[in-house]
Image (tube, rainbow over all chains, first blue to last red; front, side, top):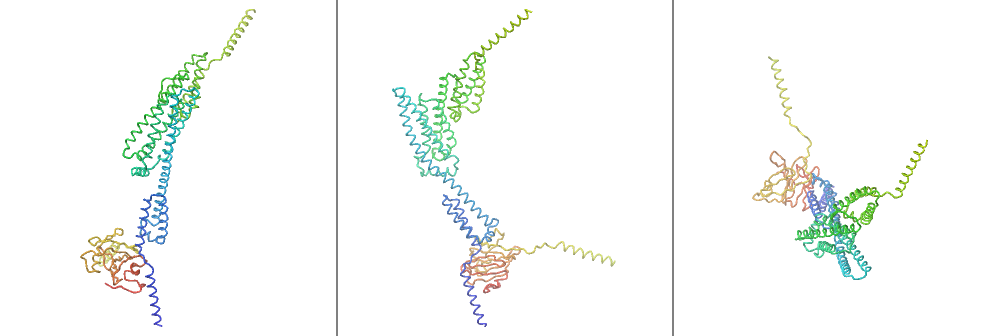
Length: 413
Length: 164
């Protein structure tokens, strides 16, 4: 019996010994070290991830880490004190989410920029075609010895061509505005690095396109001659203002990205060209407005900017209203009013209203002020109708007759 | 006169009792000193180790002398240390044959028990805290030893302890 017990004891001891050696024994410290190493490596990988695809694969690894250490939460809670396992994992998941959001935005911006590159190339090609067509139309108009009807058709085509060209220019700057406005500094730096390292083709530098667009528009503005109307000049003025406003928003970013080693030169060059374009379109627009008013027999005092234009309009209406007070029976003042009203309501407030507001030729408050003055002018200028005069005279005569009859009747008594 | 002596004696005894009561130190029972995770310390060139987290520093050289009878240079690369619920420190290192159970005293660690665990020397030891014992794992051989300040636990297949 004792022998059997001894044999059993040896067997049990052997089984315990074998099982002890078969199961790999871990130290808690190793668990903590292993977790920390994997955690740190994942944390580093998350912060240095370059794409959403990287993040997606890291999410799988973090899930695996979480699953692999979920049996050791107690040990890790002690090891990581005053932090805890769940706090550390939450922080890792949070940093993954943040990195994913950031990369999504960057990738979205990259897609937009790539699309913008294609769009700009397309715009450039369309602008070249449009420039050729416009140039040939302009030349044809200048050399035209054809009939008036033929010349008129050429002018209409030229104006339409310029209008389409301006639409194209607006599209160019709006596309750039959407792409670059709000771009964060990390993305700007990434793009600038791409340009400097040659990854981005210098031929696709949008600054070249911007510079060319400004130069060409200035040239068109200077050389359009008398073929264009106030509408055209107003549109060109509005396009310039819109282009300049957009450039003010994104210019610094674009020069930072694409300016390379000549950032200051780019800035000075574009600013100087922009100024020339602004002055040219402004001069042409105010001059054409003045010509139109002169042609319409509305003679305002001199104006060459938004404010002086409003002052001239206001003074004209006030003076005309004062003058109307002394012309009760004359319709001359009322004719002046009607001419001005035709210009004001027909053109400023109707036909050109969008351009007037876009280019801030007049503000809403200024338009409202002139409207009030106008209603006063109308009241003063409207002449008394001749029939009313005849009625008044007849009434006076009848009254006098009645009084004479009454007087005679009393005398007879 | 006898009454006066009696009163004086009573006052003296009462005063002594009150004095003793005031002088009695505050004692907190059931303190658990257990360290949940072992500390792995790397000695500096002087053989000193410092556990910043648990606030203890000492020289490893006395232990090294016990094991190798040599203190001419620091031969220990990593010191493994854990504390049990009674506050004893369990200390060992690579190639040590023993685990040293040290009792903290004022400005010193005093040997409570020297536990023999491997005649050949441990190759990759690690401590775990497994209530109420300290577990020593020899990661090289996957051997596991449970111990307390008195030595190897009875649950171990063989007792390798030897008193210092």
